[in-house]
Image 1 (cartoon, one colour):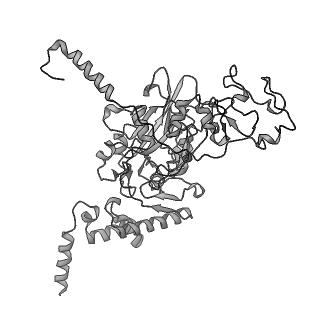
Image 2: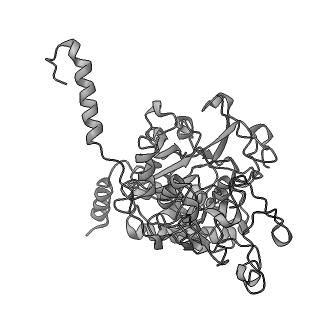
Image 3: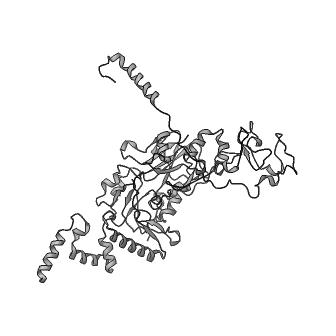
Length: 310
Length: 179
C-alpha cells in the first residue's frame, strides 16, 4: 500500500468518528499540536487534555484515567488516594429526609461534610448551609440567617433548616450545562465530571437552592486533612475553576454506608435510604409523616424531603 | 361520581364515596422488626458504677424502698423526669439492682432499656424501631447500629441538652482574594 493510500484510509476512519465529542471536534493532527501546545507536558498531559466525559468511557480508558489521576494526586499531596468508580446499584434510587422538629442547628453535619468531601479550606467551601429561621415566620428566606453564632443552640423561638443539594428529579442545573459535564446518574445522584466542567457557572445560576459552589482558586487542602477514600464523581481532589456540590457522599453510599452528615448528626434528624425499597426508613417517613419539599412550586422534584417527626 | 346525578345530590354522594374510601383504607402496616436487629453499644454508665450490686449487696446493705431525698453516692442525680410522680424504683429493680423492671414486674437488662422508655413513650419507640426517631448508623442497606434512648437522653433529666454550634461560614464580604 502506498503512503498516499494509507493516508487517505486514515482520513476516512477519522471522518467516521462519532460527531459531538471534544476529541472528534479537534481531530487527530490538530489535537496533537493543540495538546502539546496547551499542556506542554508530554503524553500524560495530552491525554488529560483529550479525556472523554466520564459517561462515555470504556473500561480500559476509565482504568487509565483513574490511574493517571491517582498519580497526579500522589504528586500533589504526597499521599496515596483511591479514586473509586463504583456505578449506581441496580434498583436503587436514593432519598434523603430531614426532621425539622429535631434539628438544633449545631452544624456538626456541615463540618463532617467538609472533612469527608475534600473541599477547599481557605475560605472553606461548605456544601451544607444551615438556615436559622424564626418560628413565628415559618420558612421565610427573607428572615433566614446562615451566619448565626450564639453560645448555644437551639435558640429560643427559632428553628433550623439545613439546605444542601436536593438531588432533583428534574434538575435545572443539568438542563443548562452547555457541555454535559453534569447529569443525573440512575440512582438519582446529580454528579459533575470535574474534568469536563468548563467553569461557566450556568448551573450555579440555575440552581434555586444555592447548592453549587465554584473553585475560584486552586483548592487548598492540607495533605493531613485530605480524605484518601474518594470517588471520581464525588470527593476526589478538584482542580481550580470547576463547580462542585453535595453528591449524597457518593463514595460512601454506593458502598452501602450512610452519608457523613447522617453519621454525625447528634439528634438523629437526618435520614437516608433507598426510595425503591418499601421497607426502608425513607419510605416509612414518606408514608407516615408530614413531609414537604423546598420550593416545590418550581417543579424541581427534590429527592431531599423535610418532615416533622413529632 | 356519576355525572348524571342531580346537582343537589352531588355533595351527599361525594360524602358517601369519601366515607367508603375511609372504611376501605387499611391502617399503615407496622413493620415487622426483629429485636436482635437493634445492635446498640453498651449503655453509657459512669465509670465504675456498674454492676450496681457491687455496692447494693443485700447482705451488706438492706434495700430501703422509702421515697426520700438522695444522699451520698447518688446526690448528683437530679430527677427532672416527672419528679412529682416518679421515683428510682419505678424503673430500677429493688431486689435485683443490676437490672431494670417494667410496670408489669418483668425484669429487664440495661441493654434493653428502650422497652422501659417505650412504656410511656410508645410513639417514640415505634418510630425508633423503624429508624425514624433517634440516630442509627452503619449501612443504609445492611447492618445498622442503633443508639439506646439513654445515649442521647439522660434518663433522669431527659430533655436534649443545648450544644455549642460549630463555626458559621465566612460571610462573602470577609473573603479576601489569595495571591
